[in-house]
Length: 138
Image (cartoon, rainbow, N blue to C red; front, top):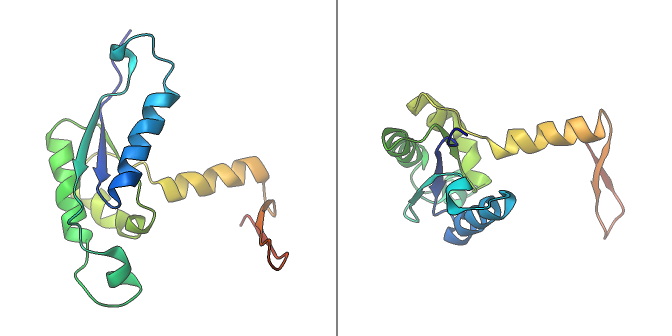
């Protein structure tokens, strides 16, 4: 059996989200032995500039250069693909993918693709409990 590829995690944007992702990956693998798990490299960097300050408040530095550097470090360390458990940081996915030659498993795009496959055009994604308004897949 070939060993699985190493995944690099751009983490620290909340640190707990990174730990939760790691836990979910460990729990998702039907491992009989430690060696059955996915090798992970985690760049836990809580010093990434605030995505909220940059995108919503219009203040603060862009996190793009820091995220690109993290991605390069992970690729250089042997990651064959990247993941990032911060929704907001995915706004800067272009800077990450331009910085490396390995794929970013973009959770926003993957979730939208999954909803489209499961629900189809016009499928119901959710509803507001307060007002009853429904949200549709695109």
